[in-house]
Length: 319
Length: 319
Image (cartoon, rainbow over all chains, first blue to last red; front, side, top):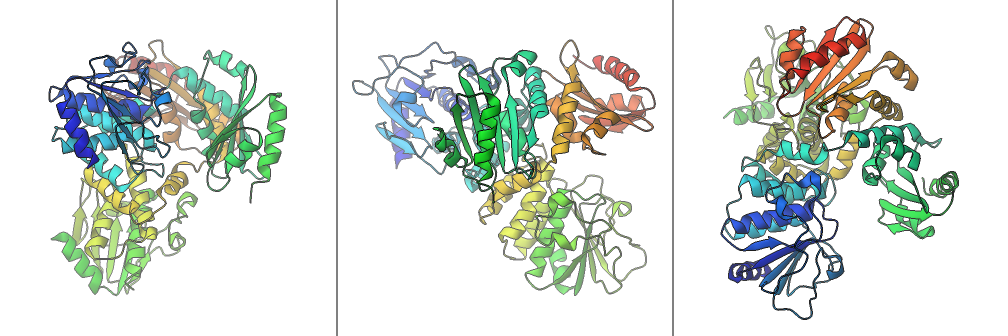
């Protein structure tokens, strides 16, 4: 079995390095820190390689200070590199060449689009998060899952499933979450740290976006705007579009939410749908792309014009 | 065992009635409809007694149309009354006298404060939701949990745990959620129906409340206002305070959130804390009450004055 081969290599390696995809999220950070905490507990030499430091909102995780962006390359004395949550070599958060090396690459992931670039590839597309795979490996190794490790894995699960909401959530996800809770983990506090971590400026920006929000006559399309003026009014440079567009989706009658974001070189458009509209299809008409329920595109035209064009196009998709 | 006695009575009864607490929530509605759907599937005569009709946002649940507020009393030919999620007789959603009757009362609940008013009392304070207890009873009865029943129980769990967030969530909660998912239930759609069901007017009101929002100098207290003017501006009469106050708690630095709500006879104040402040203690100083992390009070004074008094009092609680 793949899992036995992985455990075998980890046990034999003297120097293990772990990396993950660029712009690391809760799953890549949580799963890597779970692995580091777990293997350290049995005295393995294991370290993080990352060009980026951990984002502030995940700094509560144990050993998060080791994701400081200082170790960018795989040292020459490495025995093994574990890559987590990353489908291809180009997206890895480190400088690595895979053709001429002395270490084994273990590729652990859950993306359908994984390239199988490792010597060993453990790609479980049914796992909602890579954290679940790491949980499986650690328990198979009989490593004690303490509250610190539990917190890392719970973070993986919570962020990649949207608190058990997204359709990737499985029976197994819930079973592992239950077992993590049983370690005595303060899981409510993890929810707070992950979901209640906004700056007041971002909340104020949400207020301005709500002020711009309106629906079409049939109330199934919701349009929101984010202008440069709004950003400077609250004093922030950037805001996560996903957080903003979800406001429109909270409206019961809405099937499609549109966020029009003014940028220096045109309007960036985010599209979301709830139940049936294929927003990718519409995005592709304008050179954009994405998924059925979440897509995006960019148009170099005044915001009011983009608004009109898209509304007209999206109205056609409604039943 | 209590559960065996309950099953025994349910199987022997010809006419079973079910009721729950006044102002029914997701747990009482979900658990009662799960019980009705389950027992109907084995051809039992079972009916809902309720003075209130089901709120619109739960009308997606199977057989929800039977909660229409028409049957308010227990008919004289009843064999058994099952009361769900209700700690005392006074709060029941029906007209019932327990001293002179011909039917058995089965009291199923999870509140610590239950009065044990039934002939049989199944009060499991460790259950996060009554839905979990009903799941236990139905599976013990070998009733097939189809997606309709699963949807009812999942709704119970989701609403009473805040999507697996509140500290009442247990290993068992997750295990049952996993088993419900395995029935093929479209659980993502249940999340949408429960959490993304706002009217646009309520979202607009949130925008106005955000506009009123500010923090104290140390940024650990967040103050929000809901005035009569705001309500009339967006054209609604009422809004769930819990939804509004949670906006302030999303700010990372905030320990206490205050919502000041203007009413005809003074200011209604909601208080929430995140980690350590006992807001009940403060509420009690002004004749209010509640829990450590969620409390309320009412003061008959202008809103600006209430704001000053409370800020001063709450500042003392900060460490």
